[in-house]
Image 1 (cartoon, rainbow, N blue to C red):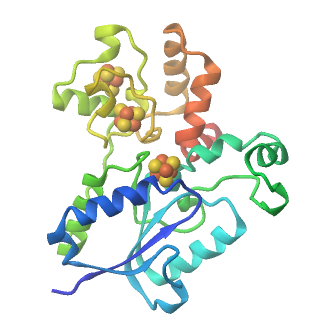
Image 2 (cartoon, protein in one colour):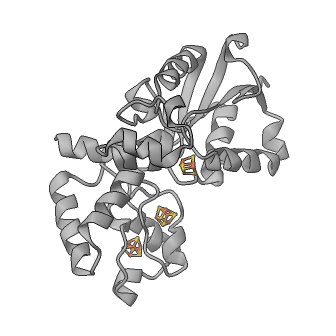
Length: 255
Ligand code: SF4
Ligand code: SF4
Ligand code: SF4
């Protein structure tokens, strides 16, 4: 059987999702036999690669170099997977959007004159077309492995169109809001992590991103008002949504 040729690409990100990729692959030797990594970020020159079946892209687009590189990735890839919350929504670097960019750069880098970033932070799908999205900060390695198995065997992944509460119900996890009065973003957040935080008695803070498939602007506003009654400040909520759902939030606001 022909192997699935991969390019593993990094843009603006912390490499946490790439760690999940590596862990997911090295702990699945059977799966590895069906994959060929033709490009791994920083190890090879993408210009030397003619074509891959799947580009796995971690990170968001924060510079014009990222933008050009991502277009090259798209040209050379039959399929593109946006991996992790940075790639799918923009990620924590979106917190700088709307702030004084120069001040943010000066506060973050010892030599700010070397830094040239775009004023906005772009998700991968706002620059090139994307075939698959797996959010999560970091992404769930199990979900990635399932997708790779399906693609290697010639199938396609089933999209997730439900919110996190569905996973609590399926797993029999008690609702932390109902049981302990803790605020939880689960009703408006994408499923996919297996209700990780509620299963440890914590509320979800939204690292899988807002589900615009199940939430519209009015519902989100009502939900945020409800959370404020639990004592969660509006500024904190907006910061969470910006950090983990920037591109979805922008689409909701634009509607
Ligand atoms: S999604 Fe989270 S873990 Fe993944 S690269 Fe971005 S910040 Fe890191
Ligand atoms: S704990 Fe959170 S995600 Fe789970 S059912 Fe309750 S509100 Fe929904
Ligand atoms: S419960 Fe929420 S914050 Fe926790 S891992 Fe899942 S999506 Fe992320």
